[in-house]
Structure formats: structure tokens, C-alpha cells
Amino acid sequence: MHSLSFITLSKDLAVSKEIREALSATSRVRVLAESQDTETLLVDTLRLRPSAVLIVLEADASEKTFSLIKKLSAAVPETAIITAASNASPALILGSMRAGAREFLQLPIIIDELRTVLDHVAELCITEGQSHKQARVTAVFSSKGGAGVSFLSANLAAAMNASTLLVDLNLQAGDAASFMGLSPKYSLADFAANRNRLDDALISSMLTPHSKNLSLLAAPLEAHEADDITVRDVSEVLHLMGRRYESIVLDLPHTFDPLTIAALDLADDVLLVMTMDIPGIRSTKRALKVFERLGYPRGKIRVVVNRWSKSIDVELQKVEAHLDEQLVGFVPNDYPRVIESINLGQPLVQSEPSSKLTIEIKRIAYLVQGNTNTNSPQPRRGLLGSVFGRSRNNNNGSLELSAMTTESA
Image (cartoon, rainbow, N blue to C red; front, side, top):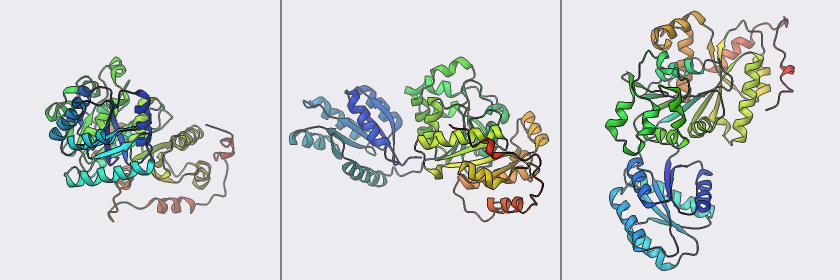
């Protein structure tokens, strides 16, 4: 996840927007919350413990403002306090610094000055011991239903060689619990309803343990509860859970709604799941174009083929050329084993540890964890090499990629 987290305070919505856009434009920062009053700021800061709080000073800032800065400095010394203002007087800047602010930003924000301030905040985090790692977040997504996203999410989470949380963001009809054989008592809806009084004990009670290294944060147990979950809830749960786990896997719905986009924004890796048929390839192409418009770096997206079979008569090099993207994983088609694992409510990577499907999912897990362990399964190019080594003389029944070239996002 992003290395620095911010909460901001401004009574001016236009200024709030300017600050949010400037911070979000850097790859280093995530804005956790935007407050318009001091009480909300205090509550959010004590609960979320961000890297920094940015307070916009009014021209006639009173002792009350300086008292707020002093209170924050005492309560959360590991959080850097930054003040900002336009046309601030030397007395105002000096007053905020004396109260405990570490940095001052001139408004409107100058990018070079912002970078310098962020560097200082990062140094402070290390000095104050706030340099603990955040979980690596992997979002599993397909814009086409039926691609096997929930199955892959559950098995990927179970394959991680680290403490892992699976978050079911299929808010209307999440099925992750059944894939893992769990009966959750609480869900993301309970997290949202109790957001302002969360502590470690309450957070732990809302998670459903599966094994020593794996837990689930379930989707709402009732469909109507999904209406109460906001983008901010998703952002906060990933921030808070990121401190408790080494890895977070997101099981996402098939639509580009605001909640899904927020989750995709916060992910370190996006596994884009594709089935090797024309509708699947088309939907993958469209999703890649959406990701491009969203400004995601290419290294963040990894296309994985699900239900792969060598009997599929499609030239993988042509698919890669059409998508302008490398295929990094091929999860074999093993319908009987998959259905059995789903019916048993047990991830296949645990019930069938030596199956080819398990080996490939574990290889993908190594990949997204950035693990270079030499015991990980064979690299993708070895698989493609064996596929391309087959004779391609018979083209009968092959997919016509030309049929897809006219498809636009």
C-alpha cells in the first residue's frame, strides 16, 4: 500500500479538493479522511493514526487552532502535523510551529515544495517508529461475470505464505465465506456501522478466522446492508487491516462502480482474470482501457487466464498482441476438482496440494508477493514455450482475433 497516509482539515471545500488532488497525484500518499471540523479531525486521527495531518489555517486563526495542534502533537506524536495557508503572516506560521506543527505549506500548493514536505514526513515516520509495513493488497477482478474471480480470490488468499485477510467486496451477493466453509457472524457492514468506535478487540470480533494465517472480512450478510457502505469505509478498512496483516486479497464484483474503483485504486496489484474465449478477451481488453484511463501503471496489472486448457485452439501470442499485455498465469481447467472444493467449502490449494491447479495458483501467489523463492513453480515463459512448441498446422475452429479488433472500450 501507499507509504504515507493523510487526514486533512479545511472548512473550504475548494481548498480541500485542491489538497486532495495534489496529494493523490503522488504515488506516495493516500488521503484517509477529509474533515471540516476539529472534533471530527481529532476522532479520525486517534482512530486511524495517519502518517500526517494537514490543517488549513484561517487568516484569523485563534488560540483554539493552536490548542488543537498541541493536543494532536501530545496524543499522536508519531503523526506529523502540517499546516497550510495562503498569504500567511510570519506570526501565523511561527504560532503553528510553536504549537507543534512540523511543516508549513504555501497555498496553492507548489509540487516541489510538496515533495520536500513528504520527504520530511517519511523521515519522521522512520524516526518515530511508524515505519511498520503495510499489507500488500492484491485485487482480483474481471469485468465479465463467471470468470472465476471468487474461486481464485479464496484460493490465492489460502496460498499466500504470510498472514492474509480475504476481503469480500461483492457487497450484494458475496460468496467468499461459502468458498472457505465459514459462517460469519459479522461483516463489512458491521465495520461501517461501528466505524467511530473501533478498537483492536472490536476489529478482531468482526473478522472470521479460517486458519492460523488466514481470515475473512465477509460481505454484508443481508443485501440491503450494502447500501450503508461507502468509499470511505473501504479506504479505512484497508488502512486498518493493512497494519494487522502482511497480505490482503480483495474479491471484487464485475462492475466499475465507485467502491470497486476505490478498491482498485488502493491495490498494489490487480489480477485481471480472463477466460480464453471471445467474450472473455473482449471484456479484458475493455478493462485494460479503463485501467489506462484511471492512470494505473502497467506493472500494477497482471492478466491471468482461468480455466486454461492446452486443447483450446488459440494462439497466445496473438492474444497478447491484441491486449498489448503479457499473460502471467494459466490456471488449469479442472472442473471436477473445483466443484468438489466449492461444495466442501475448502480451498482447493489446501485439499489438493499437489494438483496442477494448486501449483499454478501458488506460483501466482509468489508472483504478487514479490517472492523470488527458487522453490516457486516454473516461470510463465516455460509454460508458453511448451504451448507454442505445439504444431499449429490445423487452424480449424481457432478463435478469430480479427473479430475482436473492432471492439472498442
